[in-house]
Amino acid sequence: MKLAIIGTGYVGLITGACFAEFGYQTVCIDKDENRVNDLNNSKCPFYEPGIEDLLDKHLNKTKLLSFSNSLSASIHDADIIFITVGTPTKRIEGEADLSFVWNVAEEISNNINKYCIVVTKSTVPVGTTKEVKSIIAKKINEKNFDVVSNPEFLREGSAINDFMRPDRVVIGCENKKSEDIMKELYRPLYLLETPLISTTVESAEITKYASNSFLATKISFINQVADLCEKVGADVQDVAKGMGIDKRIGNKFLHAGPGYGGSCFPKDVKAFITTAQKHDVDLSILSSVDTFNENRINKISKKIISKANLNKGDYVSLLGLSFKPNTDDVRDSTSLKITKLLQDRGIFVKAFDPEAMDNAKKENTELQLFDSAYEACEDTKAIIIGTEWNEFRALNFLKIQKSSKNLIIFDLRNIYNAKEIEELGLQYFGTGK
Ligand code: UDX
Image 1 (cartoon, rainbow, N blue to C red):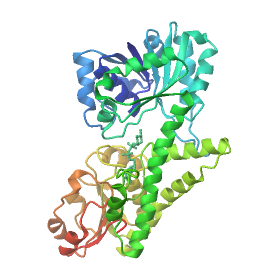
Image 2: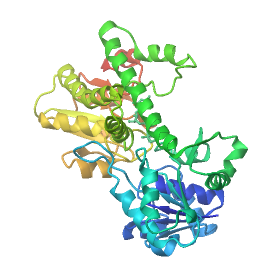
Image 3: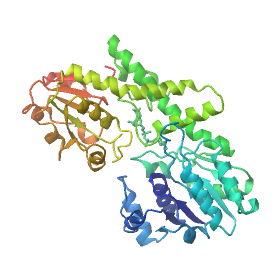
Image 4: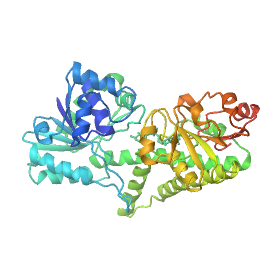
């Protein structure tokens, strides 16, 4: 089977490299020449554990993977074409901007000349895959192609493992022919007994948004419970443990913190709300999830300023800039939002992140960056733990205390034990404790 993947962003690149690992001849296409040149030298545009080894293996050893700038030269002999371009939030409306998807559909219609399947893997609102079909059908007979919705559920930082060992694969097809080909594509996962959910195109599209929105809801829920815990002397971690042990609830995504960020949850929740509104359906539960998450960072910043008595000209240290560990992605990073709110009050932010400093600097030029957590924590009034990177889990606070008196720790991710920190003579504030 020959595969073509259009768009070498996060989803496209992981998908392409992993399908090559399954043994399929795969070409990944992108308009960005520099990106394609870098990829042809096994250089990945973002940090993701394991991806560069996979690129190197399939570019240079198995030669199953290639990268190209030319869509017309690359898709004509593909059996399956994946659309993996971005679907960002439109600035004003909150809905997904599908212009990249429409352009690609148009280009596909100009360049296919044998039967193939066109798969939407980008996260797209319900109805989009059928719209892709209509665009292609303007030039190609409907017998000569099929469309399929096959959403991804990859988490940054563990995307390769998520692809190779998924909880499920969802395929939304219109007929048996395309369903059989998609099942054959994912046959390497049968050995692991991965559930394959075969459904309609619309159900597959909705499954993706409903999954991400549900996880975001779990996070906002536990964060609201955390706020209550703070007021009444309870500990949200104990509460989450007590809840999560119930199999109907589950213990995942019940970690209280500064709120969800990243390239998916904020955008997908907003787009799902807009879809519901368009169809006059009440999904107000999600509007509440979204608004609470948006406002949370403001409240947290105010709490930091007041508890640490921060004034104009003071220094604070921020550990972790990426939206979560094991990624250099700072899109919708709560750490960068806190930074901005503190800087607006004239407070200087000294920061360290193991991977995300280059990206963070592009977003916030005022940020003072250091080579290690310890250097970022010298001469400071407070330390904010913004992202739970492993290397922040066992800091030597005695060493840090030498240069900073009356230090306050704001552990937004609850990675430390309050008692142990307080015994060292530092003040400690977790989340929901
Ligand atoms: C998410 C989905 O998990 C994935 O299936 C989808 O394909 C893309 O979006 P990702 O954005 O990479 O993946 O990260 P995820 O691990 O889901 O975390 C998202 C955000 O939620 C992060 O900001 C994280 O810090 C936050 N989070 C997660 C919490 O605050 N508490 C939790 O318990 C879990």
